Image 1: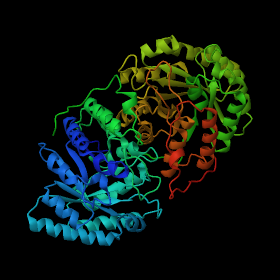
Image 2 (image 1 turned 45 degrees about the horizontal axis):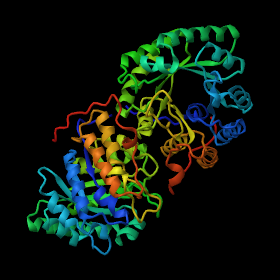
Image 3 (image 1 turned 90 degrees about the horizontal axis):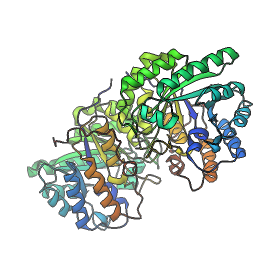
Image 4 (image 1 turned 45 degrees about the vertical axis):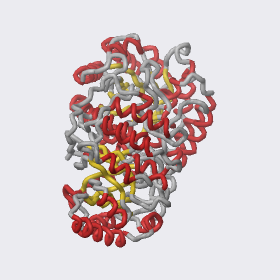
Length: 313
Length: 313
């Protein structure tokens, strides 16, 4: 069965997944301009940063300031990544709307990247849930399962292990779960199989797909996921990103190419492509010399392109 | 309904669609090495050139010699492009297995590119069919419908017009028909819709899909076409190509990225990816300075990759 939705959300994760893999520190004023520009282009979900120690990721040290600014934009859903309870407490304090807790289904990747087993992460999610509930906060907890399609360290990751991690996260109190192809190993057939199986476990709590374009398959994988009912996709402007602990991985799905594909298919993302391409040009100028990706900025929109309604929903 | 086949064919069209858009003339000895290398990598269908006047496309002037060589390789299906009856006569004389007759569904593109209306091309196909049958030749005639998803000159191309051209080609005696996104305007939803409609008209005579990666959607479009039952795809090594009469178009689907996607999905193409990547490196060296595309050559195969049977079928 093919389920092509009328609407889909592109969650901009360039300020987190993109910038964390780039050594240079983008000034806060540029990040604020990026958030504002994405908002003005119609994006309504942005992962603005990560609550990790600044000594580990100095690029993301201004996350609290970014959350505070982003929260002033009406209707913007503000996400942050939090690796542990301490990060979750900051997300709660700053009134982030969503906090994404990364869990690697690959034990080898989990130990290398997070210095924890998947079970350790699940236990931490239970503590976050308790803290969140005790505080009366409305910050939603998303368990993001990485290396869901394989891992550059460990190689194959069993589907059963991915689904087991998903069930554990839900049992521990995650409000939402998502699947990430952290290292660019997914293909459309694998996406279809895994997302269908995950939907059986999580139902509508399966909230997002996160693809990397390492081998050029990000948009094909998005299409396969769309057909299983996924309507939220992580992406980064200019396709920046990659995981420092996943050698060879490079480039998230590009926000602008993805926004074009969805709009051209008649799926409303609320995004104004002209504004998004103008923002891409500004961000590309700030990041000159870094590896940038995507094709639409060069090819331009087709003569036949007609935007779907860009009314924000 | 999703129909993922067990086997699919990647028809290498780099020697024609790729090289015709590059000004430099690749020496015949390099083309012979390319054909041999593609064959040794397991490719069993190659479009080796075009029977057009050498003054128009000096890059492809050695097509007869390439056909003669390719015909010595057991089991290789040798295709050529022929724009008119004269070209078809040469294809018949040289015993090419397939001859592809391009027809542009866009009247504006047809006039600019071929100096003929679609109806003129159909009339020529009828003459080719008569000549082929009179000669006792077994060369199959493929009517390749270009600008099937839109046109940079004319803009929108009506589905009804594409299907009308397809019916006319079949009525005129084309043995096979195919659909091409000449300028990179297709998206997966449009692919699904058009190929399903075309299948209703042509049945199993609908033989091939030809996508350009101008806006990054070539592989997503392949996946959508696969789901409608297409099992043959044109592609070019290193994604070279583009149409000189379609400004902004650049790059066919990359053979090596496509071969990886299909193999990783468990679809047997008969291609040895290691050999294909080695050939890509040689071709890239010959074409240094030209616009090359594709991602697999840089990222390499995933640690988890296991080739499907590479027995040639």
